[in-house]
Amino acid sequence: MTFLVLVSGGLLLAGLGLAGYGLRELRRSRTFRAGSALADAEVVDVAYRRPRTTANPRSGLFHPVVRFRTASGQVVEAPTVVGATPAPAKPGDRVQVRYDPSRPRQVELARGATSSTLARLLVAAGVAVAVFSGFVLVVAIVLYRTFA
Image (cartoon, rainbow, N blue to C red; front, side, top):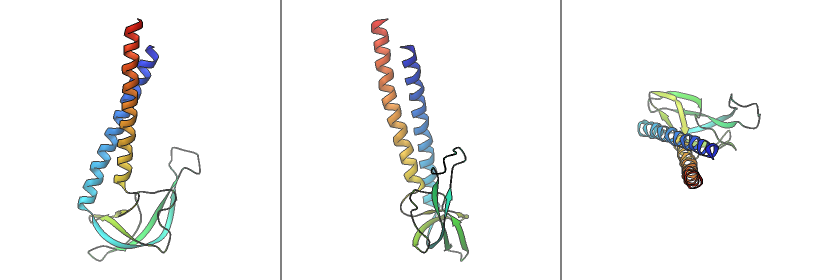
């Protein structure tokens, strides 16, 4: 019983941590969107990136490499900061992007998989884990007190 309390308590903390991280990323994404500029872009390539934390070659994401002109006239070619599987665009596609005017290489597609989409998923997953493990924790404590 003590094991169940410890595990569910640990999962509760992990869920709250994940939700908190998601909220922080959502705030960061909203700040980016509020200060970003829109531009029409052309996808010139698709970069495949695999996380450093895994050896699985199929666990990577496709990041479109876009070329666009900033409001000041600077031509920028950069990969999007958010990737997806399958690739959200292919070379030759015309897309709209959001970029940070002070750091134009910080770019993401205006539609589809954006940093706010990922942040919302983190919040939802964290809340789901926290609610489930909180329920298990309460049940475990009640059972422990009942049968102890």
